[in-house]
Length: 262
Image (cartoon, rainbow, N blue to C red):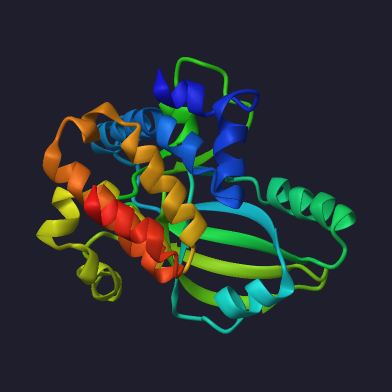
């Protein structure tokens, strides 16, 4: 029941949403098994529950952003790509998204309000970031609001960005398929044999490239507590090398030398 637990507002859902903002590496590491199970269940559901008609599904999600982030990521990025870094839901009822944005703007008057309009074509399927209609995921339970559950790092194309009369920006998105040429050009560098063989070490490398050295250190140290890493010499070497490289970038040469000696 990984998806069932994932969607409970009083439990894992709030923790996962917080991690997206706070980069709590230790909690992310501990909850990885649940996220993996949820992803697998969504993939199976997507394969076994095709759309009943050939019309697009349209879902809405309200969000607020700081003005600078909105300008850099969305306002001037029409025809570009945007990815959401967590599991999230979007509703087929547009008013639910608008109401959420208006409540957020009342608390954060200096933020930018955004209503995402997400279009999903029935032929688009993504094994990397699967999605599912909530009323079909829980067909045997009462679903209060019909909507769509999206997997981690779902990628959309930004088709249009317009400011509406109520001072909320309306952003039209289209879900990307795994084989879309525009997406493939972006992810091609990440599809090497090294990444597939050592995905955890590569996360640390990505954090270092983002200059998030404190988070990279925390992630590598968390890996050293993992028995599946400690029991495999090759994986253990990669972690110590990663820590050494991270300390080098921070000019902490004594710790870098210590990790290299390990």
